[in-house]
Length: 238
Image (cartoon, rainbow, N blue to C red):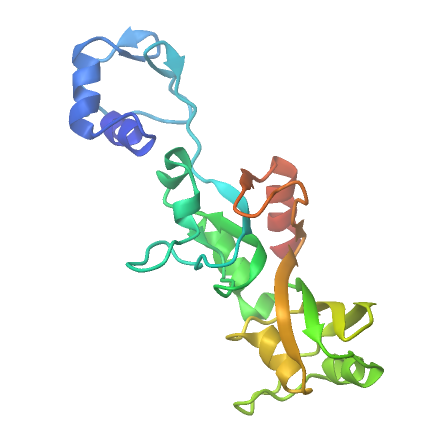
């Protein structure tokens, strides 16, 4: 990788600005001042410093976001704020993208990464990755609903869903439930409840595969995954 490309990608300025940093002897490579910003380096083994600070290179980022309502699961949009807009520039420079999607009015766990291989695994229908949602439902959720979900329900377009595990957490005119499914059809959770004559009034994803939403994250907040979390995602789904 070219040194100027690496430093530009990591937020140290444009390639032209990186070149100026080298001219001013602000950049060292393995203890030696860099004269040629276009030279090729190994970002893993070479020791690079800018203004005396060590450049810590990492090829991938893995971000857990507690997505708020009103934000869309996309990298860019001309009208609405996207989940990438919520990230600071030092994270945006890695070009992360959302793994799967949450509806605009749905909150909760969303993973963003630039690791295309892992993203493909987590969204592949063949892998049957479980996704758990907490929902508030207008109306009493019954044992009959639980049984129907366990067998799969027919949506408004005639599609029959894979079985889902429905657990009632609180009964009432506004029921509170958790639903675990292995699919991600358009508006699937809302359409599943619609198929049994009920309406979702609040929806939040709380788990995806081995990854659970960090309850310390407020809406709109995010953090990088720990190494253990990343390894668990990889090992479980290989």
